[in-house]
Length: 190
Image (tube, rainbow, N blue to C red; front, side, top):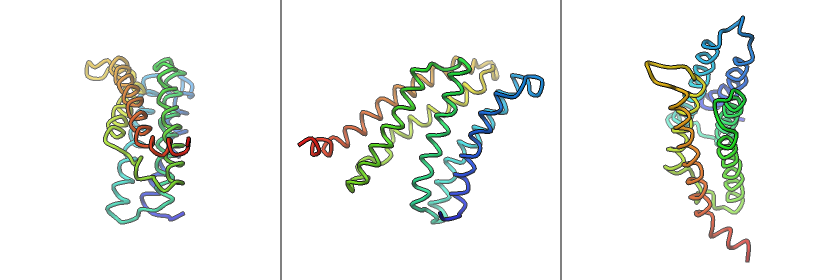
């Protein structure tokens, strides 16, 4: 495992997962519900920012590595899954939406791994629809973690709407990646 700044940022993202989750399990006497929302949101925001920053630095500093390419999406999926599970438990997101998003992540990860074994990983590389889906997903999670009103904005309502959009984009992007992989899928059925 190469020890470089991008990989350290990815490890930081992984380490922040139990932190933003644990905040909600603190007693209300230690941290008020409003402060729990704010603290967890800030930790998640830092984690989400490291997702962008580690990729940028890996390219900018020429510190890309096979290990980093493996660890980065794992960290992303763990972070999103943990947040969605917490949001479902708090009653801020529906279980079916969390299942759609988490299920897609597992499916596409498996598809990419399989395609890589076939030497076809470039055919299912990250696309613009995947990036748009991630943007909606992260914004939705941030708003739902915060939950409270912010400058007159109903974060729960807006986050819920964005999460539905993210779920639709999730299904669309999964269909897109499966379509890209369909020639290989057809070959294996023959």
